[in-house]
Structures are given as structure tokens and as C-alpha cells.
Length: 286
View 1 (cartoon, rainbow, N blue to C red):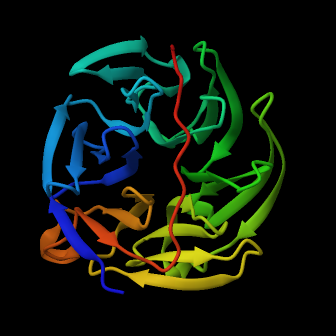
View 2: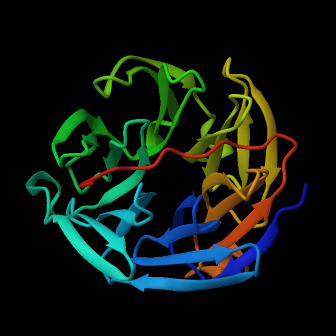
């Protein structure tokens, strides 16, 4: 299949695509300048809806229809009806850095990772609905794509610069993860594993930074298929549309179009044979 370019805002690091089930629109971010965009497939209209100026590493759709934003210095806020409200000013241990990739779980908690800064490694946190923050992992090279198995018993997690996608046992009652094992180890020549999503058959789609594609794995870890894109920095992938049959893919490099291609930093859409499932809604502060 040939992915279709939907919107091109020249994103430096387009990321975090997520489908809003109530609005029937897709939201995504440009991390570095702190901008949020949205796309309405029914009308074809896309627009920037927030220009904060602070890095936004990822977002989730809240149960009340707003957005939960995970930002620079470990800050967390909510954006609803055009109003940005700060919930966490910063995380002292994350000052000078930022969040990178987040996902809500079935109970509305959010698993949220951070980027490494200088000699300080990245980490993975869990933010509970009451605002309690728990560190789950340390020593991470680059905290990235996450997803849950269809039975809810396990969680996928990507450590990008280790070129490894892990599988953890997951306890929905406590939000705890345990028993880490390697699910897939992409070859370094195939690009860096970035954001991911899980489809309706339990397959795992992993974006490939500097790999120009999104790769599907079967639940047993074997590679199944790829979707090629005309730009190298493929950053994340999700499903949307009324029946979740549309795949949306974010890319980066909009500030390097001379080397990465004229569509770098654009949002793409594909229609694979297998559809997706709704992401869970966060309930932070609700």
C-alpha cells in the first residue's frame, strides 16, 4: 500500500498521534516547539490548535474529552475548551529534559517515559489518576512506544537506542509491571524502533526512525509486513476513523527537508488489511 500525505506542517518531530473517539478527529504533536495539531477526516480540515512554546512529548485523550499533556521538565497539564491547566509544575529529577511517548491504561492511569539528558538516563513513570507519580524504570536510553496485549495481561515497551521492544507482565489492578523480557530486537541497519500501536488481531506496529517504514510483528515476535514511507524518520503510528480501519503515521525532519525529503515532518494515512482498536482514555485529575 502507498501511504497518503494528509497534512504537512514541516514538523521537526511529529509524534504522539491519538484518535479522539468523541470528536472523531486525530491529534498529534510537534514535540520541539510544543505545538498540537488535529485533523478531521470527515471534512478534510486540519489545523494547529495549541502553540505553547514548551516541548510536548506526548498526549492522551481524557475521559472528559480534554487532553492530558506531558511536557518539558516533567510538567503535566490538561487542555480543555482552549484552556491549559497545569497539574504538575515539574519533576525535579527531570528538569532540563522532557517526556517522550505516553499511553493511558484501562483504569485511566498514564505510563509516561522521559528522554535522557547528558549523563542522566531516561526513565519510565506511571502517573495515577490522583496525581501520584511512581518511577518504574531507570537507565533507559530513550523511553518510547508502548501498548497492551488484547487480553490486558501484558504491556509492550520500547527502549529505542537499545533497539529492543520488551514485553512486561501487567497488573491492571495495581498498574504494576514485572517480568521484563525481549519481544523483538530490530537490527540496527533497519532503523530505530520508535512509537507503536497494537492492532485488532494483536499484531504490533512499530515505527522505524531512520528506517522509512512501519513494521508489523505477529504476537509471537516474528516480523509480518512493512509499510514503506517516502521519508526516513517515521516516529509513531496509531489507528483511527469511525471503524478504526485507518492508520495514521507521524514523521519528523520537517526542518531538514533538503536531506529528508519534501514530505518529511508530514502526517500520513494508510489502510492496512487489519484495523485497530480504541486507545484507553486517561483520567488524570478527574
